[in-house]
Length: 228
Image (cartoon, rainbow, N blue to C red):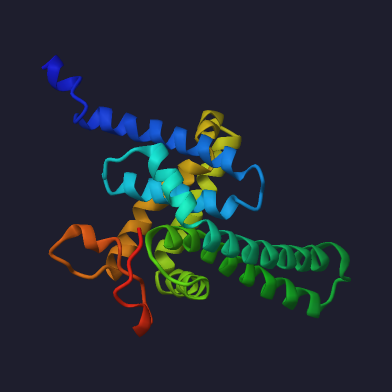
């Protein structure tokens, strides 16, 4: 009985092992995000690992993280800079209409418009780096796919955003111990729902090794090219 309990394949130990991996991934994410412009690549690498953890795929955390970081660096950095610029503009617009603009009907309308845009922005941000980690596509198509999936799978999108908000709230209030897992904990929980969404777009192949390598919505000239 004890031998079975201490077996690594025991569900309890596998569960504990996953959270150890999440802790390690968060540390790697923090270190690799220090230059700021690398946040896109480190976030993509983080999701590359957490998506695998959520699929119960064994692997080497360090090796997987840096493999994805290196392979996705250029595209993930481009995506990050695009979202950073868009987020800065959106944040300024919200600040202006909330704090500076005079009260009026127009101000109310603009606040509503920009809040709706902020939701879309957050929804796309939730999908774009996991998509980069999971599928091969050019930057423009990856961003489009993030928008497409965020809207098409609105229920899952709202669920992830709500769960993320709960985790953040608990981390700064009732369960500050959660903060040691950082953003990787959010990525880990999101990964379960993201895997269920992504599975709808995976080709039905006999060989499971091919299934995570197909492009998503690939153009005709892109078909046959593989990645992760």
